[in-house]
Amino acid sequence: MNARAAAEVLRAQHRAGANLAPLGAAGPRDLDGAYAVQDAFHALVGDRIAGWKIALTTPVMQEFVGIDHPLAGAIFAGRVARSGATLRADDYVHLGVESEIAVRIARDVEPRVGGHDRESIEAAVAACMAATEVVDDRNCSYSPLDPLLLAADNAFNAGCVLGRERSDWRRLDLGALRGTMTINGSAVGEGVGADVLGHPLEALAWLANHLDTRGRRLRAGDVVLTGSVVTTKFPESGDTMTTEIEGLGDATLRVG
Image (cartoon, rainbow, N blue to C red; front, top):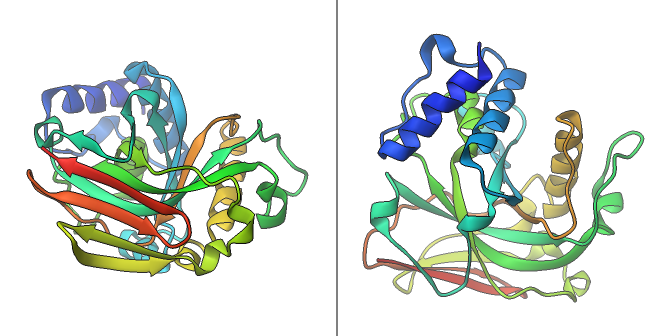
């Protein structure tokens, strides 16, 4: 497998607005290879990495894809928006949205002997906020969904919309916070923070340890989407979608 060649295929698909297609002989054969393709894809995009998303954080989604762990992808700076943003449906092949608790990292996170855990990673969190992840699955086949292709293609991240940051988040029990997604004012899904690997900070610790295996770090100022508490929904042009996280606020977008 040639990671650069595979990444160039993915980049060409994105530029053409094409459906996601298997990489064939150029595709990764294992997860390490998939992340090598992802890293090469990041370099081809050429935008600053402003943070990370964590995918497949619930047992039902892991079982669906056929793996027993999450996956990670980068968030590019040019795709970070604030609550109230309007997205153009035509900019995506198949626009999806997810409802998440996001965190902003206070300082660079160095490796820890034995790996980070929920307690050690908490000190690295400056703020929490409601967030909507923007995904583009490019009309992929979900029967089955190839986890190596998902990882290689940056875990389908296409940006995020962030709500107001809360620096006083420690007074809240993140695992107990209820999250609700509404589209045009109607609730379409809900969950709690504990749906994400048992607690959003458990997901964050997983990410810190995962990035360490790739020679990367969580950096000061990074935004991390800890995983959706609602299954992905696919809004259409004219829709207004809101993520509301109890105690943290909301993150709203409109699809134009």
